[in-house]
Length: 478
Image 1 (spheres, one colour):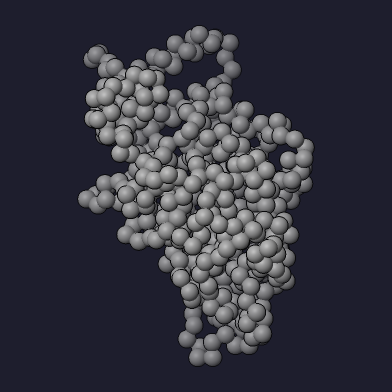
Image 2 (tube, rainbow, N blue to C red):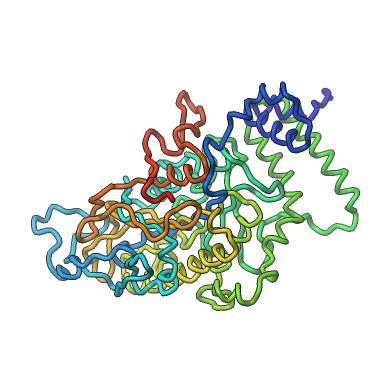
């Protein structure tokens, strides 16, 4: 057998710049970094590019397309014109239907907070948080299809295969807790979003930066196959020797296959899984929380239990140094009753079911982070892939990529403000049209990252999360 390389040489050669930077950081923590090492690694030129306003991001994603005119974007003109023809010329084409008459909101709107933000009656808890929230009313998307539109909101591209926002952020900043993944995904209990795991994939970035999916059900293990099977033959000392032997084999295998970052990612995943056997049970044990906290998130109430657990877990993860947490409120399924916000059949029933769930969990998350002093360093983003039409589709509404609403809170965001305006009936973004690029650029900016400088060379192109687009929404930055 060929001689095994030492850890330092192995990481530096197998990972290229990435491995070198990771090793440099490790050596620096251990006090073993020399001046020459620092110069060679150029670690002093690595991220962040500027002082950060936040340390972590929690992204709540609502698959299926939340109707902006029934939730956040109040349109008095739509109320006045409700029942009239949407387009007398007949030139409009919807995704799955012919345009019906204009339809006012199915829910009553009212103003809240010192900022006077308008929210619908779906959100009795979030209405108490509006002065901590900033709304972007002029979001729009390049696709009216759930899969491509969801990819765009999560990766910046409508095609699969590009790194997710969480992967880019962890590629740039890493984690603050070596015993937990830097990027954690909390899927809806009923399934994944359109496009599946590609929404939290690493794309062409080293595979180690993909999200780690954790199920928060309160029953069974949060991570499948994490714990080894019970075997009286395998003692603690024996297991340690076995892991050490496997580690040696893995590294020898990798040393002859330079550039295979999927192998490096797999080795790192094995190493992390060993640490997770100790850290995962602690972080996922919600019994440590007070009854008051669990009640705030709706635990113990069947309707709110699942999403409430996801939001509470998100708080516990960022509290322990996880950099990016992605929480899904909805799953991909076209069969009614849909487990998402895709309200073609009956919007009042659909949003009436999902709205209170989002309201209870998201409001509890904001309030909980705030009372613990974590909201200032945690950026909360709530997004969907596109909006819905101001015209009726029977009792529902069809897809509308022309206008929808996203909100943010904490992490350097001004509370109680808004950006952009949709037209008088909520059909199209009219003032400051905003794409995912701008949302992503703003999130990176708050983390201390210049979105134009966070790049990765792939297939002859310096790729980035915001492609060749994106502007920081400075009006929302505190």
